[in-house]
Length: 238
Image 1 (cartoon, rainbow, N blue to C red):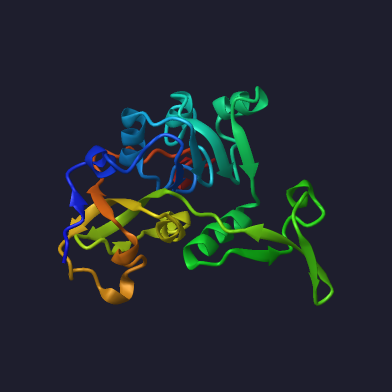
Image 2: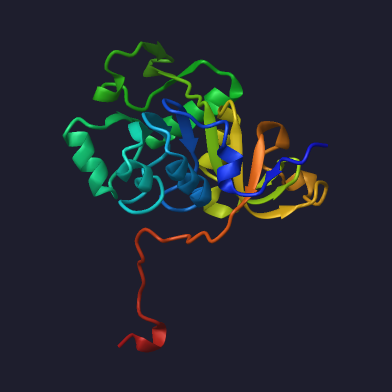
């Protein structure tokens, strides 16, 4: 079986990344994001990108570094509230935005990977989200038609991966990453640990290797926390 592991993030993206592409980027906030692959895209320098992701990172981290570098033309997202540069670029007309309810975004991506062209949902009916979209009534309830999302390339983050591209995710990182793996025409996975093919329990594999084209070991990931919320330790509470 072919070894899909590449030496580093840049070599894993060389030859498959170019101007004008649509890229899916996994993660939720700053959790489960492919930090090395995002940095490699910045260094490789493709422009006019459409990026499908739950959010756009923060001003100096995650997808925010691509935004600051002028590489993103359009975002398809569900939450953008942590990025001041995003707000500035959107309000000035320099950045296009297709806003989605979070569940709708997730299902549009899942549908893209499952070969489902479109689906009806109640979410967004009667709001600006539904403007210009077909609607229908099922069992007396109103629905709006949403189309599937696919990408030229998906960059995702997993906990473990084997040399054949089989992946296991951990906790919150198992959100947008698995569905994006199947919705990209080409998928590159950044993993925290690479194991030999056959070492992963088949019953615990979340993404089969058939969906994954290349694997790279994550190196030096910061794993930042967006907002640190703490409380005093019990012995400190008066």
